[in-house]
Structures are given as structure tokens and as C-alpha cells.
Length: 339
Image 1 (cartoon, helix red, strand yellow):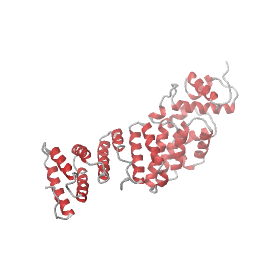
Image 2 (cartoon, rainbow, N blue to C red):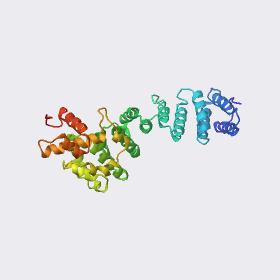
Image 3 (cartoon, rainbow, N blue to C red):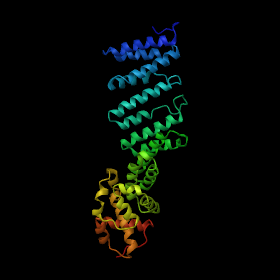
Image 4 (cartoon, helix red, strand yellow):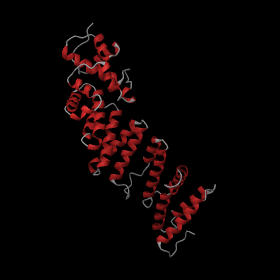
């Protein structure tokens, strides 16, 4: 049945595809065994390589149209049987991507990321171009980020970073820049994330959402020269007047004390990772507000009690003292703690 014939390659492909249709239509318990035999014969070398490659391409297209459960099982069989050589590398990549899309669709982003990571990136095949690798690295990073595996997300976004200069498709670069900023944000590198969001805000169709994220990240950034520059940049941007918490940006830029009741609108923007408790038991949010208020008070008076600072920031006295002490120790605040 699989011997070479004098028929044209296209005729042979059509015959094989008709046989495949019969196999997929007969949903009996032997479906997997029969499908396995079909694939093994197709890649055994008994079939003309052009016909085999074309038929496997048609097979993968059909797997995209069957049920997810069936497609997952048949993808696994196909991957087990496809030879790991240049003739079928493109097909292997297609099956891996199909399998990953099914897994992702069913709510398993980490498993989808791990599946995509098995792509043979090291092989210089026709599909394995710089744009392809770039997009896949960004996709893997996005899936790991969705699964809260920020460490692995960073690994793959940095792989994409090495290729960015060679990418000319705007949507690809926007996606990369967006996910890089989100990963930095999740790693609490708020100033770096804010800078990237502000840069992205020059793109019309994404400008306001990313500018809102820039506001959040800037407010949460540790007191530093970099933060001061971000505050000044945002304060000068007339677009932020239409966004939530723009008044907090103004107060911080003008080095005015921010009181707890004034933060209600800003708190509505916070996600769980913005409220995360750090190793010293202080939340990211509380630390940012205390640091700002400490610096604001430092501008207007030489001596202030921790009780007063705590009352202004709406945080416990011991937490306020801990934050101020660390700022002094790191050289970000001049002063000393009196008895």
C-alpha cells in the first residue's frame, strides 16, 4: 500500500489523505494503533520524501480540526514517530505549537510554556528564523508570567532581548516591550518598569493603559534620583490628568506629604503583587508611601518623631522606624535616630 508508484506526488498525497480521513472518521478503539501505523509508514523511508512531507503537513492541518482530547493524543503519537532530522523539523515544530495551544486553551499556561520550550531552536531549519525565535521566546515568557513563574519568564524575555535589534515587525516589538515591562514590575523593579511603560506610551493605541501602569510603578518605586526623574516626566505629561492617581504623582513630585486617606483611589489600582510582603515584613505599598513621606518631612523640618511619621503614613510606628532606619543606612536619607 505504501510502495512507490508511478503516480505523481500530488496524486499520491491525495490518496494518503483520503486514507487518513477514513482513519480519523472511524472512532473505534483501534484508532490510535491504526494512526500510529500510518505515521510510522509515512516516515519510514518507503514513501517518497516529498510525498511524505506533504502528507504530514496535511495530517497536522487535520489535527487542528479534531477535538482537543483526540488532537492531544494524536500529537503525542506523531511526535514520537517523527524522525529528529531536518526533513521533518518543521513538522515537529508545528505539532509542538499545536499541542501547546491546546494546553494553553485549557488553562495550563506553565505546561504550555514548557511544551513550547521543547522546540528545536538550535537547528538552523527553514522555520527557525530570527523572527520566529523572537516571537516564540516572547510567547513562552508571557505564559510563564501568567503562571506566576517570573524567574522563567525573565529567562525567555532576555533571550528575546538578544534578537530585538533584528526585528522589524512593530506588533512583535510592542508585545516584547510590554511583557518585559510587566516582568520587571513583577520583580518589583518598579522604576525600570515605569521607564519602559512611559516609553511604550508614545504608541497611540496602547498609550493610556501603559501610562496608567507607569503611574502605579512610579509611585511604588523606592526614593531615588531615578524616581524623581520619573515623577517630573509624568508630572509634565498632560495626558495623566485623565488617569487615576495623577494627583498623587503631583504631590510626590512637589515633595508634599501624602496622607493615607488620599490614597484610596490609588489603592484601587493595586494588584496582589503590589501588596506583597517583603522579607522584613513590610508591604511594597507601605514601604513606598513611608519612604516618600519621610523624604517630604525631611524637606520641611529637621526633627520629627516616628509617631508623627507613622500617623501621617497611616502605618505602625515600628514599621515606619524600620523603613526610615534603612533609608539612613543606605545613604538615601541624611539623619540619625535619636534616643
